[in-house]
Length: 535
Image 1 (spheres, rainbow, N blue to C red):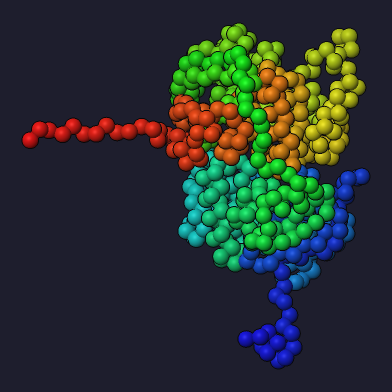
Image 2 (spheres, rainbow, N blue to C red):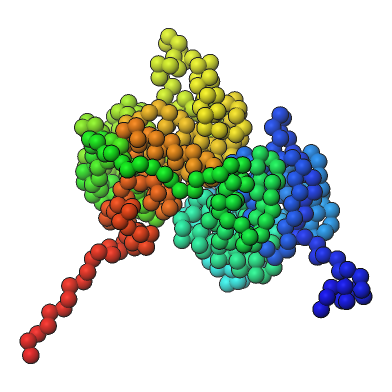
């Protein structure tokens, strides 16, 4: 029936949006993070917000969640104007937010984290009992199964994220904001998260998904808004756009979504690993006899589900194996045997041997967050001749070098005096990548190079990695992004349970074959036919 007939001949009013932002602006000193932004998110939909790092996505959602107060503009929820002064006001308004870096107390249980800040009174027992029942129901409804008595530090990253979602739902959130939710998840965990989000949407919840991953946008969202340099440049139905179109809107130019590189020209062996084994301090064997070789001018990609020994391999090659571990085997770089124990097994010695390292966890291993960007650019290389003035460090030289690197790698904001923690995750990654790549190492170890990085920066980082290869350097690439492994690597080795399950050439394999190897199944293995007895 026509809407005008239902409404006595008058046009029916459109249903109020779950979220409506009008003219939102926010500045941090001279930096305009958001400029006159309008956004409409319909109830019961999954709405994606994409843009380069520093485009203002997280700032906009932090305003909605009450972390920041806008300089101008209006927030409406369900058609009603709202003043959101802090996160408690946002929670009372039915908004929950899951941050890129989780806000959980590591030595508390799941149950204790759920009720933290939402206790019913002075006595915890009734709150814990009530929360246990609610969690049981939420687990059934939304596939959010997690042991309520497990401590957070014992949970996988994927299960910790479920706890964050449970916290929001326990507080009766109708609007759920997720900031780069798959940046720390394996592909299987990401697929499970998408099932959860679809279930929440089907129950009438409104989901806002901040991401830079175009595959996720196309797979999970109903509508998508694109931000660029603090402004909203487009809002479209996902079914009416394409990855290429979204990438161009994000960056303001056409973007190469696939890596283009000439065939590798491998030279002499740079890295040789023979029968490398690591047993941790609990007696668990983390690496079980690793053999691999990487030659000058090639990229060896390591594929595998996170937690199968890739981290331990990078750590020992980088010179900082886990304390209490027992190591055996041999590692040679340019023919020189490297130490596996004692004072000579350290990151400084590895750097002197020509090894650069982009670690998997930029915040824990790659940066000191409270230090300025210019200080982080010099970490590990502070004794380089160009940073010295006699016996002292030349801070002015370091700052000039940092400012130049920040400009070349398009770190935003381009302020070398800003503390590392004040940059977005993707821009933190660019600081680490700039520091390590521009030292021109003979061997570059790379762990998750584009985790949390936007599409324009991914294109740039991939190009710099290929340029380094073409300059005759050896590169070991570890990534949980199978597309990244297949497009960047000249050879692919697959790790499972601390072993190399097999090695493939990208042109001669498929994602399905690699997936089987990642699960510990060798697709080339054939069970022998049973012997038949003569009649």
